Length: 112
Image 1 (cartoon, helix red, strand yellow):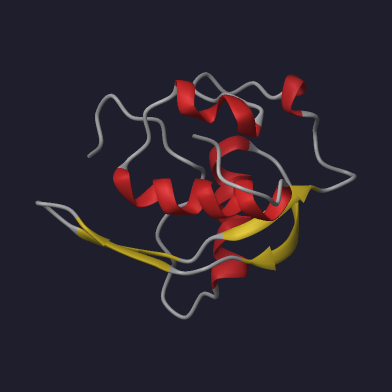
Image 2 (cartoon, one colour; image 1 turned 45 degrees about the vertical axis):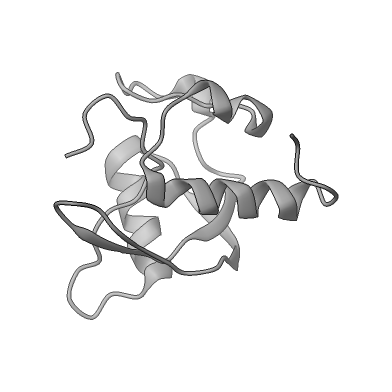
């Protein structure tokens, strides 16, 4: 749906599934990792020409018993430092999420 763009891991919630349960399931299914949820972030709604999306982002860390990202055998993934995300194209809805995570982890004025 977003050809040429990188995506943050996640996906659609199943019927009756909470965002917390959904992100755990999606990360397990998509890239084989277990996470610890640290806190919810600001919900985001965005309308594209072809779709309306509602994001329920959660700040997470790799669970202590999860495989190391270097050990994963997934073809299409990238672990990237937060300060290097501008080198990659993300769908418009992700821009506010990335800005919020930057502000949360590195408080202060936004970079110019």
